[in-house]
Image (cartoon, rainbow over all chains, first blue to last red; front, side, top):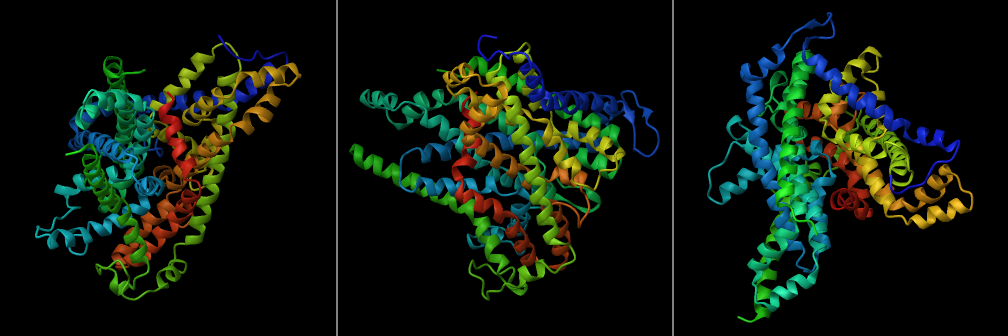
Length: 295
Length: 279
């Protein structure tokens, strides 16, 4: 309450009016949805017949049903590869771009392009690139004397999809890191130079500690995105009957609800996703307090 | 080795890595453009320059049974409505949080920020059920209506920007007898143009590229958005063996955003760095 304009008389009404959409969103969009989804997760409902009480059955199924369990392990595997991939590669790109070399703005445009365009459209090209007999990727591999890979077959599809998702996310990560890097005062490096610290020392003793806020933020965003990853997976791994060769939780929720009309089961999965993400966020903020350096 | 040669070598290595990376980032787009101008018979040739240059794929795109123009129009007006809704309602709330003093401000703001942790799937299921009972599935209403009840991301971004506007301006306006609404509309909105532009582009981009929501709310062709249309088209064209037409469709669907990006690169980037740096 320490700063701010005090509303006078009728202005109290206008203040309320300005906040009304947000109130509706909070009550109806957020709180209402969460409560409704929790309630649904204890029910069986196909929207055609009246809902019936399911008790904990939908939650028990999350760990008993082999397909639902597979979707959870897939999501975890995906995130375990995607998050470090995005953070490390985009940090590397940002550090290289921060070296004040010619043509940086051109590079920045190039690296950001996949972040601008829709995953649906670029997935169509990636689908061609990954083609087993006709794709350019295997063509290049064979030219280099390597064996062709069946990229989108079940055994490799996870890696193929992780690669494309990282490709699509580097642009945003790079911007976050560039903003963090340009905020580091030049004098720090000059002082280190005088003391005879080489590039490696400077990177690990100045750059990394001072950029921990950006690393923290990017890890957080990447984790949320990893648990939401859907578009590329839908476009690249779809099979007959709405199935996927890399069914992650988000994919499974869609299929459960809109292909099988099992809205209760899908709700339980949505809650599962929320709990995992919330737990991870709590863990990240605990790490932040211990390791992130704010000036 | 002198300092200068050391720096030169490092520069060359950086250049080489960045160049290789740039090829990997842009390569798929070049491939998209190239394939869309190839004859269907040449679709798997491994040359970047089409052996025979043709515009037939674009002609075919607009003559096939899925109505590409309708998809384009739908994506356009739905994304614009979503953007307008977000700009207005987020700016309204952001102004209150940044400028006005009222009871429960911090609590309300924290609650709003917490909603960022709710995955879209959690809101999607109950919203779908409600819209189904209102007989609105298959229409665009469920896609744009929720954009008119604010949102944590947009409100946060604009609030951060509003906070950087000097308070003296408000005090001076107050002395001159300006009302709350006048201060919002005549001072804060014009001064926040850069942030509003960044949020507009960010929101439009998200709406235009969204797949999950149109898939749930407008699931069937022809009356849907470009993303769902292209996904449907993929199955059709892959079986028909016409990747060239598919690439023409993909190219046209990314073109509007790419054009805006080349003109307003700064705003694209601002949307991300504004949200990221100033916590």
